[in-house]
Length: 298
Length: 298
Image 1: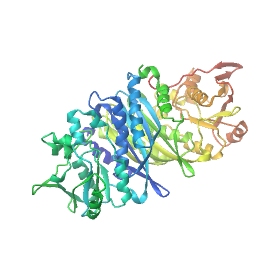
Image 2: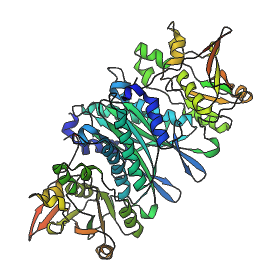
Image 3: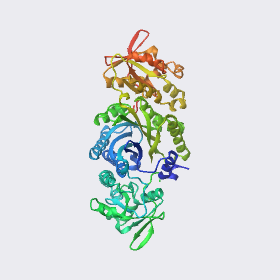
Image 4: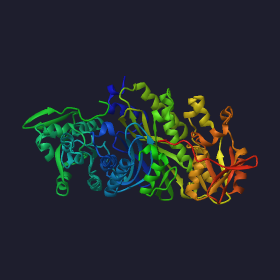
């Protein structure tokens, strides 16, 4: 069987099950009194970036997607390692622009780049490892959802998909990791599960379903669709099945959610149910949400 | 200017100076009472591995080169993140072999793989980030060399170069990181500077010269040339200018070295001098060592 027949999530499952790694945005190393939270994301110019993407955007994006994983765990960012594969005929100026994009993202969101590696590759490959810390009691795992939990997202949905269609590279790639929101959510100590929306809402809900053995009822009319997506007739398609939003998806007891809405730009989009299925209700009708979203090797 | 005109070390210098990163095998994060030591190395099948390299060897090598960086700092290995870029037409079985190589290397040398990422790339790219810990007083930096220090290496030199010529993939790629040796050296608290020999002895000495503002007098007849290299007429070329040995190069006060030789397979190969130059003496003649070795983008 070829990897393209397996898809990214099966590939990942293979290695995580082999190594007994919990399926989460980040891995956890136990320290005295806190968790060190670590993650790695590799981006590849050919498969991640539309043609004509400025190197500055590549650098920013590579850092920000890693920060987004830390954000979903409620972590304070601390440090990064950056390994880059670069083509030999790349212009020095483009290399400098990648670094500038990384540096400005880090200057804005915190932590520092402590080391790295550069190697020669055919394509531009940027592999970042990011470290952060979080108090044990505040860590927000993917696994921990309870029946009756309210389901929330930060910000709006469909921005990533619309930006891709619009070829709006700033909106698509200069993403704003929800670090502040993640830390605030973590500080409450009420969130039962959290993950980032890099793969799209539908795919993320199905991943949470698998890990938690619980399902979701999503309120179709409540979805906070982004203005950019509303320009498209199939805005709901962009909100559900396109990746790249990098918002946080989380669940908590419903009575906690109400209070929280006064302090944060969040929207209740549904509730946790006992059956292992993901349904979307709109205008009195209920239907199954499709299990699809962005996936590499597909 | 193109990256191929700059070479890997200039590229690295650009980013490290921009980010104020000390030039060392690993980066250091300060923790209470100890250092967390972190490093990343990316390997690329096309530029790192001879044709026909088994995927098992790729997995092992990718882990081991990172361990070697931790070894040079005297660290205990703790955890790894593995980001892989894989071609979509790769066979599942080859993917499994890469993982098996990684796993067996980790089982043998310690630590655990805590997380990772898989993405689609044209070539096979493996980017590992490795974490370890070391007591502050035992950390062995690259910078710290003192005039009069004796210069030592562990093991033998030229194995990597000879293995490349012999197409002996086991010797070339199933490398044995000197973790135990590194920890023992660190435990003495006498080593003033240490680095691993991934780039070859000459290149490593020049790197230490630049960082420390001191030079080296190397004893040509004392170099511990590996049996595999002795099969070649230009064995000394393999010992000095080829990378891939992954031994440790370190300096310490000469009186400490003598005691140490009784406990470890190490060889005194020279001494630290005040002038910023690297000379090799053999049969009464002294000449400059050339500043060359393996370097990407060259």
